[in-house]
Amino acid sequence: MGDSTNFAAKHPVSINVTESKRFDDDGRIKRSGSVWTASAHIITAVIGSGVLSLAWAVAQLGWIAGPIVMLLFSFVTYYTSSLLSDCYRSGDPLFGKRNYTYMDVVQANLSMFYSTSLVIGGKRICFTTREIILFFLFSGGLQVKICGWIQYVNLFGVAIGYTIASSISLMAVKRSDCFHKHGHKAPCLQPNTPYMIIFGVIEIIFSQIPDFDQIWWLSIVAAVMSFTYSTIGLGLGIAHVAETGKIGGSLTGVSIGIVTEMQKVWRTFQALGAIAFAYSYSLILIEIQDTIKSPPSEAKTMKNATIISVSVTTVFYMLCGCFGYAAFGDHAPDNLLTGFGFYDPYWLLDIANIAIFVHLVGAYQVYCQPLFAFIEKTAAEWYPNSKIITKNISVPIPGFKSYNIYLFRLVWRTIFVIISTIISMLLPFFSDIVGILGAFGFWPLTVYYPVEIYIVQKKIPKWSRKWFGLQILSVTCLIVSIAAAVGSFAGVVSDLKVYKPFKFT
Image 1 (tube, rainbow, N blue to C red):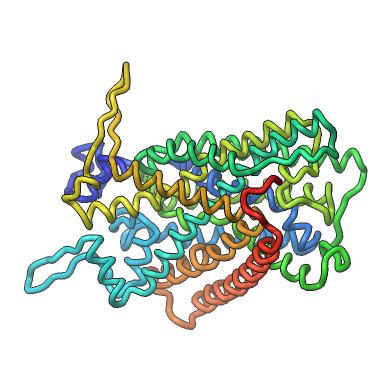
Image 2: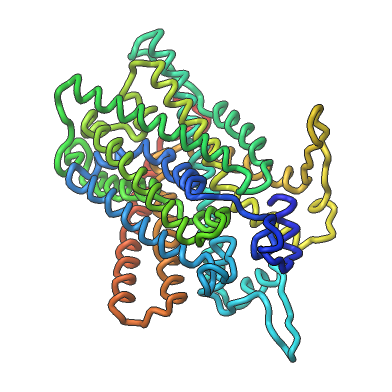
């Protein structure tokens, strides 16, 4: 986290907002986010590499189930995100206690204790993050522990998925130019490892941005890039259909014969995971909401940002997925712009793939900053006197102020990027990884926890009509997530049988 944010977190003060416009009601530097910056963060997180696999996902499901499943996922995502945004503050929606992270929301509503302090003998005793974590590790707080593991493992998984997708896009630029020079039947084999290293080096640099609130500009650039390559993919799909005069595909998707019966089942399940991944952003929703200024209430602004971003992404998803399927039918590639269903115009494909790469640079940060913040805050509270944690390096920049770098931030974030890059080199299976991430994170983080938190905070009576409806929604999404996980793991097992690390592809 940034210097001022860390200071405020460690030394909370009571400040009358009317006396100073510099601080919010929790003593932190005044937030400046709006519905548009929040929408940019969401679009950057949502319209990512997942959009490129939607044509393949629709091909597995067919013309009937494909669009219906996308619409259902969009509705569930919007509805549960709205429930979660109401829980940013505990109690009063305008002046209640803020919950800064997803885990804070879970802890405030679902853990054994509802605060980080106890009153004993008339004296209030406060607990640090370290004491809270140790308590939950060795006693109750199962909900908090499970949520934390799921959220942060999923964030780490997203970093791996985006590293894979970025290398595929850079590799596609090189191969596109090769096909243009030597013909479409030329082998044009390329190793993906160098491109993963390039992406990793760039992320090491951008990972030194202190906190989430300071990457708003990167989110806007990334959002523009996502619209750029999505529009190009959509345009190429429309042009292909117009040129051939044929609409590919069938009502039920890839038919038995092209694939075996079991492959049909696994691919159908995997397609559900791919669509779920394309809509997953709830795991960083609270962190995005914590950047929003008030009034109006953060929940109101976040709901507006959610409906704007989910509506925009759903339109893009329907268009890209359906036109991609119409263009290629059962042979739709698992990555629309890098699977070489299109070869020309090669320069337009290059622009699209470069836009994907730039977008993924920003999306990587949007997802990883909450994980960075959690580790650094925990380390600062566990070892407040450690020089490794507190050491500040001042880097002089000619013509500008010196830039301060914290040693721990530099070292740990660099190690994180290196590890995620190495794992990406070992498992570069784009569609399988996308499916696993979607299956692993969608139900618990997008559905289960928002539903349970909302029930507790709003005191919805058990067995009431609303309670029963929310439970049906949760169980249904659980079944879908299990099916998606099974299909995606089956895909990984199948790919590992023939895969050799660091090979040319």
